[in-house]
Picture 1 (tube, rainbow, N blue to C red):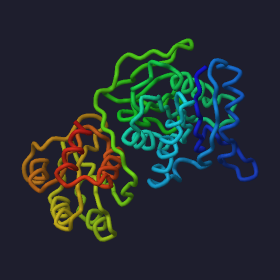
Picture 2 (cartoon, rainbow, N blue to C red; picture 1 turned 180 degrees about the vertical axis):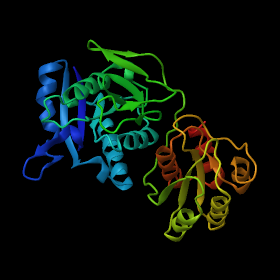
Picture 3 (cartoon, helix red, strand yellow; picture 1 turned 45 degrees about the vertical axis):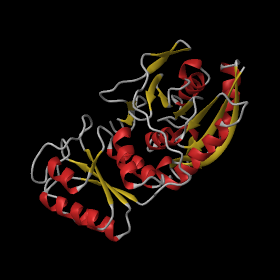
Length: 326
C-alpha cells in the first residue's frame, strides 16, 4: 500500500461560509480529508499534517519557504511515497514553483485546492483532492517535479498559472499545455517537463520586488524599491522585454546600487529577448539586466529570490538564472 502525506495550508478547499460574518473563512483541517480518502481510495494510506490554516493571499515568502522545508522533511521519511499539499488558489502556483526549485526528490509532490468552499453543494475540493492523491501515489508521477492537479488535469509547477478568478477550471499552462490527466481513475501522462533547476537553499531572499510596466510609467517604483532595501527587482516589461526610457534610467541606478535586476514579459505567452534598441531589450542587456525567458513575473520573482540566497557568486548566479529560464 502506498502512503501519501497531506500537508494542509488552508485555502478555499478548507473554508466554509460564516453566516454571522457574511463571508467565507478557513475552518476545516487536513484530517477532514483522511476519511474521504479511506472510503474512495482504499489502496492508499493518507496521513494528514496541518501546516497552516490561512487563505493563500496571506502567505509570505518566508512562510512559503517554511512550507517547502516541511515538504522536504516529509519526503525524507522512508515510509512516505508522496506528498499532497492543499493550498489556496490565489498563490498556489507560486508555492508550487518555489517547491519545484527547492525539492530534489523523485517522490511526487502534488499541489491542489478548490474554487468553491467545502460547504458549497457543488464544491470541487473533494474531487481535486482525490485526484491529487491518485497522482501522488502513482509510479508515473515519480521524477516529474512538483505538479499541480486541478479539474482532473496535471500541470507542471513551472508552467501553470491561475487563469480565471472564480471558475473551477482555473489552472492552465498557456502555450505549454498540461502534462496529463486523470480519467476514470487512471493517471495518464502525455509528456515530461524538460526545463528544471534545483537549488539546495537553507534560506530565501524575501526582499525581491516585482514591477509591472504600463504605457508612460516613470522610474518611481524602481527607485522606491531600491530606497526601501530591495536586493532584487523583476521588471514585467512590454513585449520582448522593453521598458520606457525613464524606467531604463531607474534600472541603471538600481544596478549601480548593487541591486540585481531581471526582466520578463507582461504578455501571457512568449519569452523576452534583447532585440530592440534604446530602452528596448538590447538596452537592458547592455545595462546588465538578466533575461528570464518565458517565466511569468511572479515566478521570475521566486527564481530570483532563490538564486540570490543560494550562496552562488555573481557569475554562477547569472548562469543559474539563464538555465532555469531557458
